[in-house]
Image 1 (cartoon, rainbow, N blue to C red):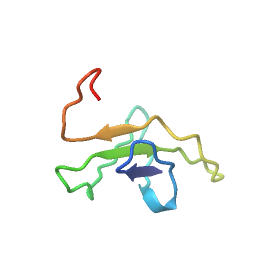
Image 2: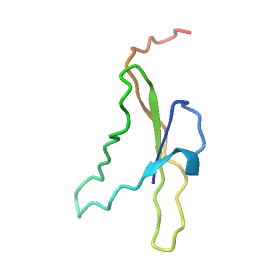
Image 3: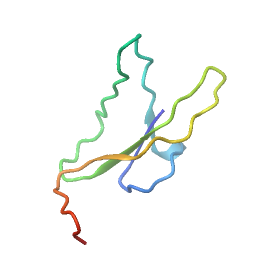
Length: 76
């Protein structure tokens, strides 16, 4: 399950679920392209959770972001 938000500290839930990534073949990476991230000035943050055969979900992954501005170490 893939989730997206404009806030980096969001909780994954039904309102921000983008979809599911299909299982990769052996030795391949799972890839998901967010076709709806269309605003070039927006920041997008993502979380992924694995879902098992019985429907049990893993804890949320670390958050990752895609944004169009530079980060300055030690900046406010």
